[in-house]
Amino acid sequence: MTKLVEIITEFDGLDYQERLELLLDFAEHMPELPEQYRAERDAGIGKVPECMTPVFMWIDVVDGKVQLIADVAPEAPTVKGFVSILVDAWHGATPDEVAATPPDILRQMGLADKLGMTRSRGLNAIVHRIKNQVAKRNGTLSTSK
Image (cartoon, rainbow, N blue to C red; front, side, top):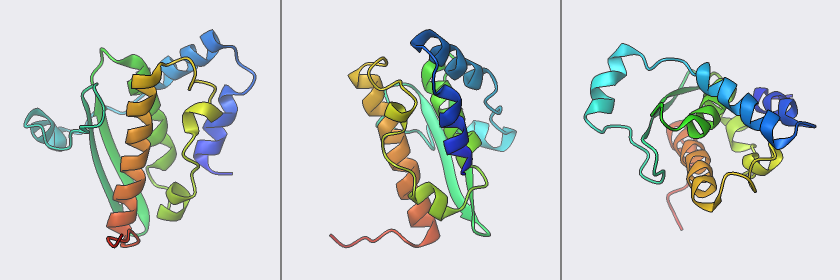
C-alpha cells in the first residue's frame, strides 16, 4: 500500500466536516519551505499558474526517488492541506508510484463535490503538474504527440 492510499483511507467513513478538519490538520503540518527556496518563491520561481492560490513547487527525481518541495499561501488552508498530503505521500516515493496514482484523488477523499469546481480544477491541475514533472525528470515523459 502506498503512502497516498494510506492517507486516502484516513478519509474513509468521515463526514464532510471531519474530512475538512483532517485536511486542515494536514495543512498545519506541512513542512516549512526550506530557506534555500524562499528567494526563488519571492521571485515567482516555481509558481503553479494553473492554481488561483499562490502555490509554489520544486519537483525532481534524485536516485530514483521523488523530491517534492512546496509552499502554499497560509490564507488557503484547504489548498495547503491538499498539497501537504501530496508532499507527504510523494516525497521519497518512486516515479512509478506517482505515475500509478489515479487522477481522481479528490473524489477518493470525498472532497470533489464539496470544494467547488474552480478549486477542484486547480487541485487536479497540481496533481497533473506533479505527475508530468516527475515523468519528465525521470525521463519517461514522451514529448511526441
